[in-house]
Length: 186
Image 1 (cartoon, helix red, strand yellow):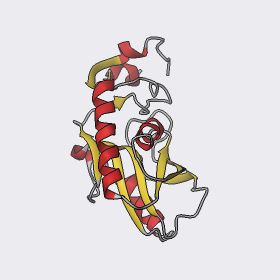
Image 2 (cartoon, rainbow, N blue to C red; image 1 turned 135 degrees about the vertical axis):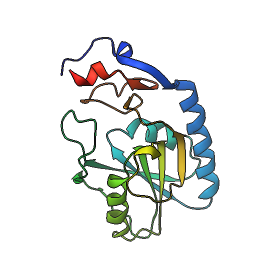
Image 3 (spheres, one colour; image 1 turned 30 degrees about the vertical axis):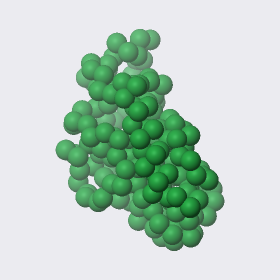
Image 4 (cartoon, rainbow, N blue to C red; image 1 turned 45 degrees about the horizontal axis):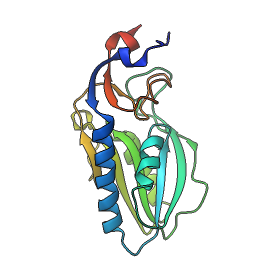
């Protein structure tokens, strides 16, 4: 993959602006704060894509918050579609037994990875576990489950920016946009 030096020119369409994202993150932070009032919350970020979202979200939650990180893979190399095989590359660094856990995701696509993670984390006996995702792409869903907090529903398109990547590139864009097919088909 040859990386363009002008990342913005590789984007066909901006789906969500930086301002739209910031407003939604603030709204989600207020809802989470209200829902967990009087509790300590553990946010679990699914690396690497959800890191910018979790960083912004945790600053909008007015409660005692702990964070932990997991890294999983269901994509291989420069793939644009999930393989369906989920591997844990980095596990939690602290126990979550008896804790309220909010799993923070960048995007829910087929649901296979999230379904696997929810089963895995429930096996660690948290007091509660809910899901917060910036993006939801229901057109590709293979496994159904309730999503507790969702920022935006998006169409079935390959998106990058605000943590989302193609070949580890484009994560630093401040918006979410549709990647031009030429950028990933070459």
